[in-house]
Image (cartoon, rainbow, N blue to C red; front, top):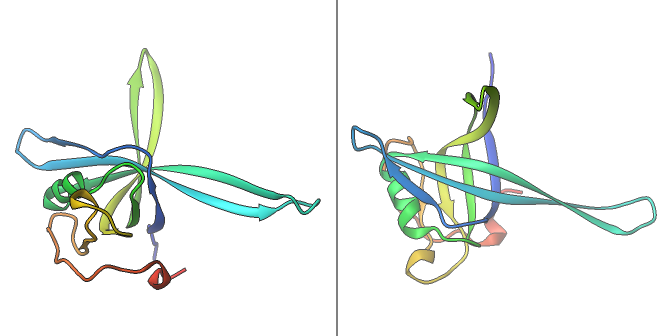
Length: 138
């Protein structure tokens, strides 16, 4: 048995980018930042930011492109996927999270409305009531 699951809550570093495959399927890409905070040996507060690449397919990806914006807090659940590509003769690797569930957190205007798009990444999913920060499972 094996498990490939990632769960993140973070903020978008830029507006999402949506493109479409030749078959017309939406592909939404964005990056989110998560922070780790701790105290060092001297009692000083330390902080480290980690950036994560997120990919969302289908109608859910279109909805992410429509409602998400830079700075927006989001919950993402999906699986890790690493792909390779060649650039100028050198092989490079990129690890990203292919989202199966995306939940928009916090408030905001039209692009910031709270939405929950759970379920299969090819499905648009239903929309829930907003999830408060106190409801985040960690």
